[in-house]
Length: 217
Image (cartoon, rainbow, N blue to C red; front, side, top):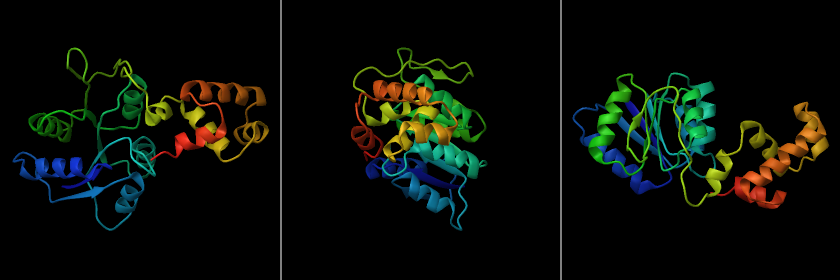
């Protein structure tokens, strides 16, 4: 089995690689490393075949959130496991919709990582979240609350619906309401409503700050 790790924190990736290499229960031929989604796509489009991708979500250039959408269409047989500090009901439901095999929070210990990875590789889908019960949630009716505390730029982006993200990207590409409405076959009033929601959810009040939010590494 060839494994690809995607995380912009190299020390974390090296630590995860060491855990996988020393595990007696996970047999892998090779483990390679990428620091962002664009590098992942370059690796997957190369000659080497990968069986498993372990990815973070918040990465520069192309984050794991968008990467997973692309991989779902281009590499449907690739097993994907997310290990991240971010979780919310909306996020987990989206990961499941794109056939992600599992979600594990950063901070779990080595024994848990190998335990859950083995179960996932054997066909079980596991979405483990750190909550008051510290439980493993595997059912299709997963219900989660967003994390408390500060909301950073990545969380603000993933809080937008797919349509809102699409409109936000057109906004920062200098398209006006009329142009966006024609491009998406929506009314101008609908675009205005989406624009208002985008600003409200992200906490920004102009296109320049929205651009900074979407292009923040």
